Length: 85
Image (cartoon, rainbow, N blue to C red; front, side, top):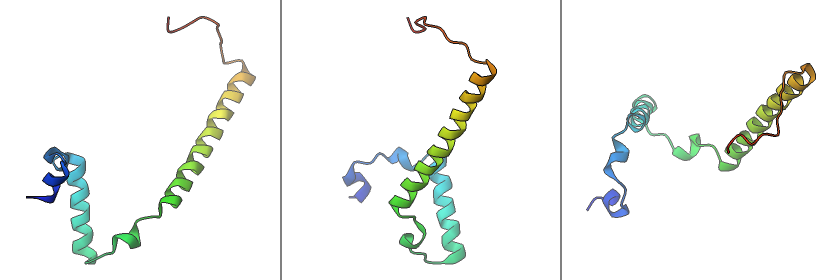
């Protein structure tokens, strides 16, 4: 029995456009560079986490400055009305 069937993974996961694009890129890398260690090209999880936190901080700062500028210019309206109700 196929190991994917044992794991209970649905066959449809390998049929989508995104998966096919990924598979094609992996095939292209293999045909261009030969055998490449996955460990040598995949970043450590802590680097990914740190990069995500830094990007979130940058975007948070931009958003905060946008709100500050809007408040300073009087471009913000506020209400105590309940909008979901």
